[in-house]
Length: 268
Image (cartoon, rainbow, N blue to C red; front, side):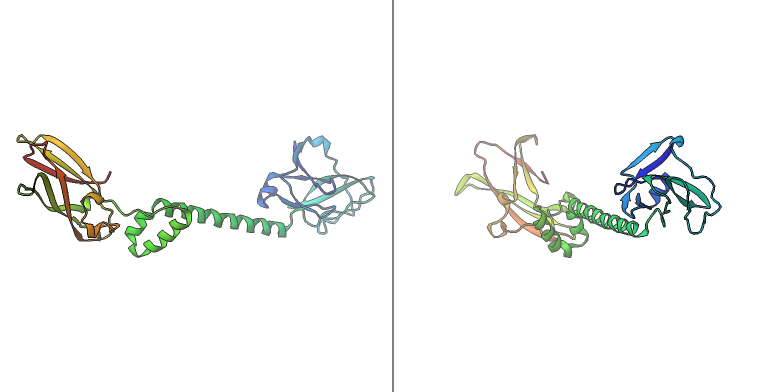
């Protein structure tokens, strides 16, 4: 079987091979009408017996790639490594004009240019996806770039979360106090939390566990940053690097007989 491609302009058929097509992205120029087309689009297979080979011609010029054929059916040939490859033409002519070159360089350059442009666009898309997935980590590595990532997220409709490394947070001190003179049922928790990291971090949640005499948990509650931050600090979006924050919690313990407590930091 042989590979044959058909010119959509004049209907001339050319015998080709897969290596030639792949090497030039499938772009070929018709030797009859000079039309450039994609050989893969009209590629078919035919039996070898269907291809008519020209008889040997003493007037054939290998360098010129042209031959004068006396028959009524026109045949064109292409020189490939010194071997003639016949090309069957379904047009009726007295002579046949061989193509200057089956594969044209200009369409190949254009095709390669489009492929390069597509590669660049795909690379930019990949970089955008990486930036989206690791935007928080990138602000940790280079904190000064955060404004640029925030603009990027504003453009695509996302946010740049602050880091949440719980290992870099700590409770420096805490105290549970009652005020029997004014509000005996209210207990006030005061504490200082610290961010030991070199980058800003999101405020953690605070879990308070109340314990009985046997240090068994009798009550548990999780507080958000808006619950424990002081009024002047509630507008802050993060804990600054290597910074301490004072916190305060007021809650009703009238139904509880708590004798101890445990305070934990966590990110939900």
